[in-house]
Length: 174
Image 1 (tube, rainbow, N blue to C red):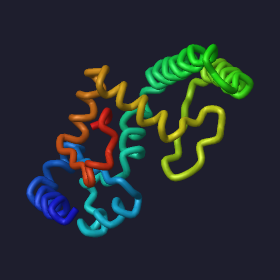
Image 2: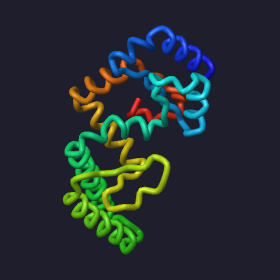
Image 3: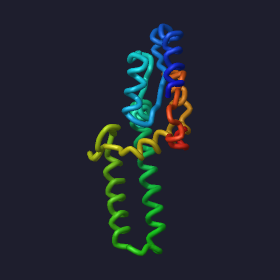
């Protein structure tokens, strides 16, 4: 983290004016909110340093693409449903698995009607249109790996990206 902060401060000093003019930022992904706050403090809350957790960062990137989020979410839910249905014949507790399958089917029906998904990286996501932490990571990693336009948009906004504590970051998202 200390090395990252030194490099980030150097970039802020050397490229800060240019980045502000071009509306670009240096993305810094951390593992915890506490780490994000510490890095922000160490670089004096410099405006070009976009420091956040992985969940907050990827949600910020994908959030404007609601149609694509919905497509990926429905695909993810259907994959989960298929996996549970395939397990059903050999399941020991068929009643519990049957309930899980029914709840997933209800969730798929409800998700098909949602036009605006929301996500709170710092709290519970219990509303019908809320995505949970795991879903945001899976959906964003799929979108970022499969959508070249989204990659281009992200790179144009964040030409430099640092990952603090990368060993704690999900491999598929890396």
